[in-house]
Image (cartoon, rainbow, N blue to C red; front, side):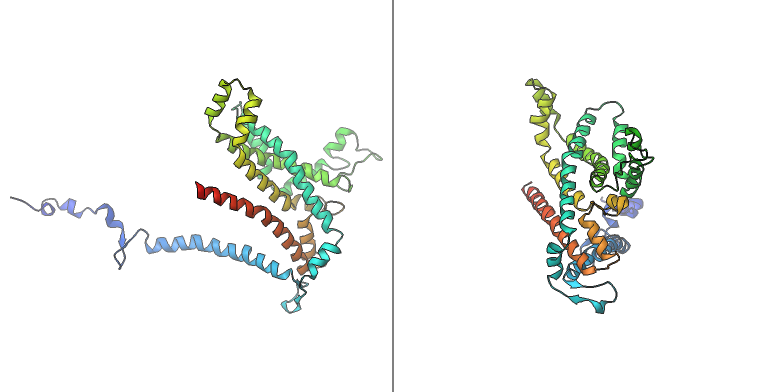
Length: 324
C-alpha cells in the first residue's frame, strides 16, 4: 500500500528546494537577482561609468573640439573657430614646442636605458628568494607608492645648493662653489631625471618580478643540466620568456615619459630648460595667457602621440587573446 510522502513527512514538504529561492519571471525564466540586487548593481556599475564618461570622454572630445578654436576661457560666446591655425602656430612659431618634444624623448630614453635595466637586475636578485627579500621589495617599491609631488619636495632638499645632500658631500656648498642643480639649464633636466629614475626603478622591479614568477622552473633545471651557467640561463632561457613583460614595460615607460608633469612642476614649473608637453598644456590653459584653444591643440598632439603607442599594443593584445 503506497502512502504519500508529503503527508508522512511534513517537515520535508515544508523544506524549500535549492531552486526555490530563484525568482520566476512572467515569461517563465528564472531570475538570479532580486530587484534590490539589480538596483544595487546598476548603481555600482552605472555611477562610475557616468563619471568616467563625463570626466574623461567628454572632456577629451571637448579638448579636441577646442583645439580648432580661439578662446580665452571666459564665456562660451567668445569662442571663435580658427581651424588649423593653432597647429600651424604650434609647429612653426612656438620656440618652446620642439624643445619640449625633445625633452619628452630624452625622458623616455633615460627611463628605458637606466632604471629599466636596474629594475630588471633587482627583480632577478629578489627572485632568488634571498633573506629579507620582502623588506627589500618594500624599500624599492616605496617611491612608487609615494606621490610624485612628495618625491619632488624630497629631491629639492637633496639638490639644495646650500644645505643639500649632494653639495654637502662633494663640498660644493660654500660661497663661490655652489652648484645650482635646479636653476642651471644645463643640469636641471638631468637632476629631475635622476629623481624620476629613482621612482621608475621600483616600478620596473615589480613588473619584472611578476614576469619572473611565471617562468617555468623546469626550463631553468633543463638549462642547468645542459651545463649552462647563471648568466647563460638568464640570457638564453629566462629573458626570452619575458617578452610579454618587456612589451608591457615598453608601453608603460612611453606613457610615463609622455605624462611626466608633477616632478618638473614641483622643481621649477617647467622653466629654464625643463619644458615638457604637459607643462605647455598647463601653462596655456590655466596660466596667465589663458589660451584654452592653443593649449588644447598641444593636448591633442600629446593625445595623438599616446594613441600611436597604445593602439598597436591593444591590437597585439586582442590578437593574442583571440588566438588563445
